[in-house]
View 1: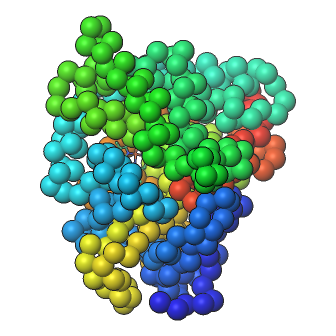
View 2: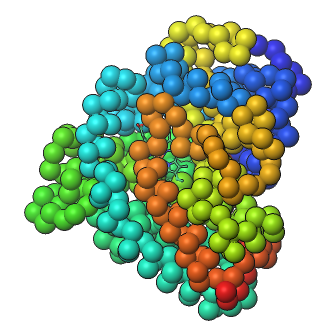
Length: 412
Ligand code: HEM
């Protein structure tokens, strides 16, 4: 297990300084399955350490083999859950393995059809246009995150779920609590003994669950063409529905909130590709994939070895934590030619930003739709976006979040 001189990719502050591409490359080349220490930091206690998986082929292998690399045993976050919370956390499909996972996934997929998603297109397009126009007309330097992309992602999600738009701030607060728990702007909630409370524990989620219950009751009386109506009327029991509401609130929100400004950051930083994009020389759907490759909203997902295994020549013991790093796999030179060059026409583009295997993102269709519309409207409403300063990044080893992105949005 001793690999002393290998770079650290655990500390969330490293990711907040920008993607640690040099560290990832060193790991891919020298130790594609590398032991990482998990010291106490940012108010959170130490953990037992984990294996960091950084090559594309190995990331895909882990994600496609739930029999060896379980989502259920220790759930899917790097930090170990409190053992007392595990049964609760395992009610979420994200934290299950086949075959149980398949039952929940099939039920939910039936409610998340491309047909239902497609019905949001017109509204999302108008929304993107309205937000971008308002930001452009304000003139000067704009924070794209605060003025446009946070609101865009949140309101699209409220449409899908059937949450009243006026309650979007609640969704925002709940997401921040779960996602930003390592960030100094979001200080941890402490228990009676002064220890930080895990944001995914039942205590921290009670308010959100009560909301999901009330919303489901409301939808039974007032059905509408939305996901909560579909889920309130078939297939899931109450705890499953509440957990799914939680999963969607976080998975469907923070990821798009990261992808939209992250894509603009990548675009604005590359004048050649930016020009090609604004001249309409690239297919937007293809460009969306490349921008997701360059800026993966999810930094890592965790599995736990269900049995002893060997990965890239490294022996992994049953019970070890195994963590895949999507941003590293997306820049693996074994798969992507010139991986640090932004190529908006890149095809094929087997990035893993949506994961792979049985848990591959269930909202990918909705995410792609939102991003395509956002970039199409950006090009229609604004001229070439210019960066007006560096972004402020979320302190997290899970979500590649941008807290602010100062830009200038000229008229076309
Ligand atoms: C660009 C945006 C998005 C990215 C990059 C993304 C990424 C991911 C990734 C990497 C996973 C796999 C988790 C794992 O391996 O354990 C996942 C799962 C999931 N995502 Fe997304 N996601 C995005 C948007 C969305 C949206 C908009 C929704 C819903 C509206 C959504 C719903 C889900 C759900 C329900 C799962 C769990 C699937 C399962 O456990 O079978 N995601 N997502």
